Length: 346
Image (cartoon, rainbow, N blue to C red; front, side, top):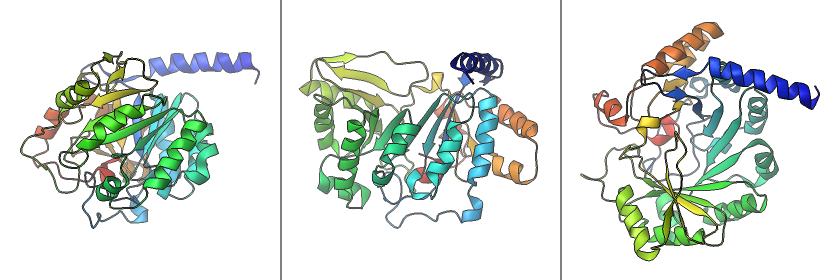
């Protein structure tokens, strides 16, 4: 169609999206889905998996691309405007690009992002530029030896090369670094320094107990306040930036630096009040909170022949029951948090 008619279609879609917006019982609009396309990963990061890995799902237990596409169509119809592809490592799943192209064509989907460890990006760089609004790279150290210790794999050179390639293509890049006591504290300041001349957004994430073994420490020492104080000792000219509604990061920049940094209170959970997201695991479970262990079995609904309308109503009911915050969800679990992040969807 002509640009004018496309514009008209988009405005109708926007109005439809508003009419169809999903709200939970606390009045929060849910418009963002984190979609795990696989539970498999080619790294073995300490904060995510035990050394021997975890028992991955048999292929038939994982949602097919067709099933994922159908669920995303339904969710966009319910007002979802942003989808983030996660894993495991998304690029270990074959034919991912073909699926992403179909996803990108869903009318009403405004943003498609991805979280990746960047080890397998090289053959897909031009498609990444074409398909994604931004790329988040999980990278916990700028030191090759520490990278090896944390990930248990020797892929540092490829990761850095691929990050440089993303930046050269002008793709907005965010770096996700999990701050781990006694493991990568020495990386915090070099990562902030990286933002001096590079237009990159580094985010420091509080460590969470999703490592396949459970809580590491009796108390989290490196919380968001301590991370910020540590940065300010070396960089006193830290400016607070605006945090958009629904943002998980507290955003900052050092005055005069090209890039910026953020801190995500993932364990302190200060951002729950504006949470706008749900997650779909590779197994087809809809989780309304990272810390809850119950979820709606969408795979079961799909495979038992339910209609789009029936599935949409089930999703809306699940969203309505979303917990107020991560603490309530954790309290309701009845068991300690010990799953691997790769089974929940990063």
